[in-house]
Length: 228
Image 1 (cartoon, rainbow, N blue to C red):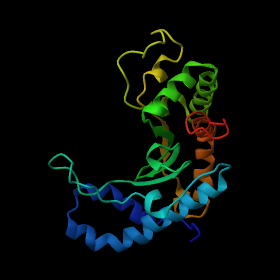
Image 2: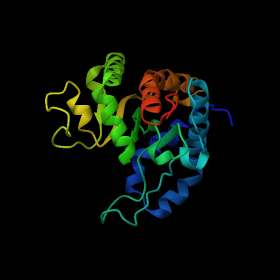
Image 3: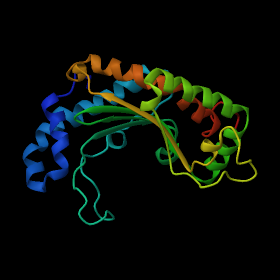
Image 4: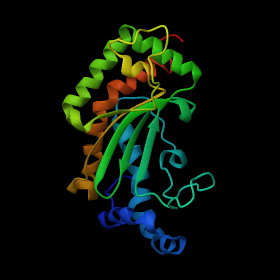
């Protein structure tokens, strides 16, 4: 299905979802499916195809459900999310693969690149960040901050309290070395073209800013193009 735009009214409904019960959701489910979920699937497919990268899009995994799994959630957690989350990744195991995200809510569109660490990738991350390859990652992060506005860009991930051995506490990339997972992200207000096919190009332009970081993650952590 080609992306033709979202139903803006359905997108606006997302902000109400956390307050809904199952009956209210059921009454609006068809509109959310047709106006948000289905266009979301078409959007991530279109954006992934437009980017110069080897990306995997699988409908069931690339479009996160609007409902939450409450089995292990704290008591009182909302049954439904206030956003649509779309993903495309590079690798066989989505859980630990370099991933690109689009996050849409009633007010903002977010873009991100990153991945979770297993022990092997955590060690590769530290070695790469500490060495010359880390300099290129730091430059790529600065370029994203310049393009999007430094104050709006967040490098996220749970961190250790101290820089891990054997690297010194004053290492120039100490903050990156301390990370236990990595994501860089930024967000912008929802544009008027969210209802039009042009929204796919708008999203592609912004995810392309993150593509050098995504490529770095693929090369250094996923082992593609490095003979690993």
